[in-house]
Image (cartoon, rainbow, N blue to C red; front, side, top):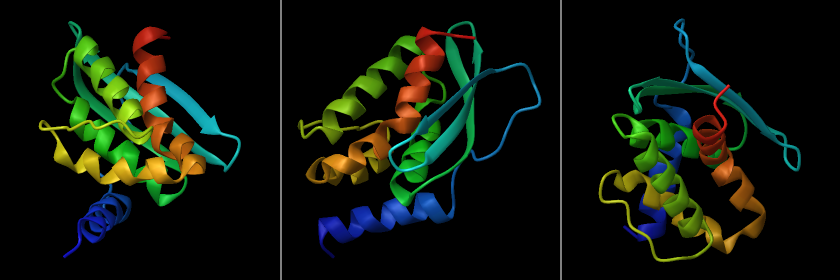
Length: 140
């Protein structure tokens, strides 16, 4: 199996069987973002206690890239400090811009590394991560 095929399967798995899709009933930080270029939209909820992301959930609509990225991001940030979550977001942004970055802590994210070949899709891939960054840096 080619690496591209494996990555495509990982992306489609997260798209068809999203992790952490839904909402919380509790008091959480909620961030709504959209990509006006293509219509992707996300509502991200972060449950943060003592500077640790205990859980993250999302709802939204969009292409397989944006929704898979949201699914992967919500898995990757669980249990991370806010600083570690921001560092993951920075590394993800670097990866989709073509930099050589690895994610030993959650390898599924690397399936989106090929997005760098399609500049129009970078905004799709980074939508959820930008929501994460906004929720941490500008909590409501």
